[in-house]
Image (cartoon, rainbow, N blue to C red; front, top):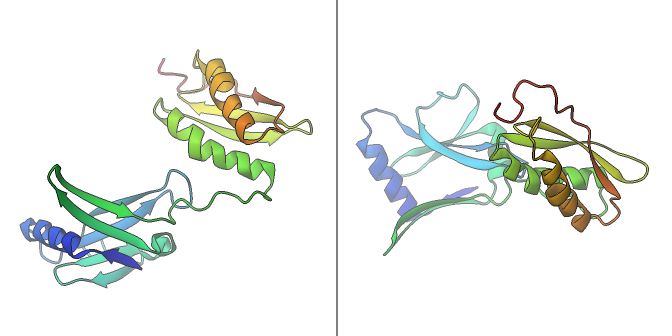
Amino acid sequence: MIEITKSAQDYFGRLIEQQEMDDIGLHLTVLKPGTPLASCDLQFHVPGQSGEKELEFKYDQFNLYVPASVEQWLEDAKIDFETTDAGAQLTIKAPGIKGNRPADSAELAEKIAWVLEAEINPGLASHGGRVQLELITEKNEVVLRFGGGCQGCGMVNVTLQDGIEKTLKEYFPEVTAVIDATDHATGENPYYK
């Protein structure tokens, strides 16, 4: 399931040796699994600390604990530690954590929602914002709703027309328009007041 290279095992062994706790291991989980925003999170861990059912993997110098709920997302995962002239780098590769792009035969709404999550929302998140698909009209108009820092932002029209609409029309030529259904005058946190 999870491959940990010898160099990574040695690295973790040295780190765990430096800790002043008995029975400490590593905990690997997946944040936002099955979405384009998925990422791995690796931390020191005491068995049972998470309060959820864990799988235990034993290595020579430590144990790795993985929540049973994320096991499927870590299939074929690999943890490596490489040392080069430029320094050292720990890498975690988990090819399945983001799920899969919808098939070409999928509904347009599913494909658009994927592009919003995979390409648009990561950029909006840097400003505390997000956008989600509300509906697609019979005329293939895509109706979106902004939230977070995008709600009430003075640049939302530029983001909508030059960013989101352009991207969606490149992917889906059948899209005739992109419409903002957000009430930008209300909300708890319109663009950093």
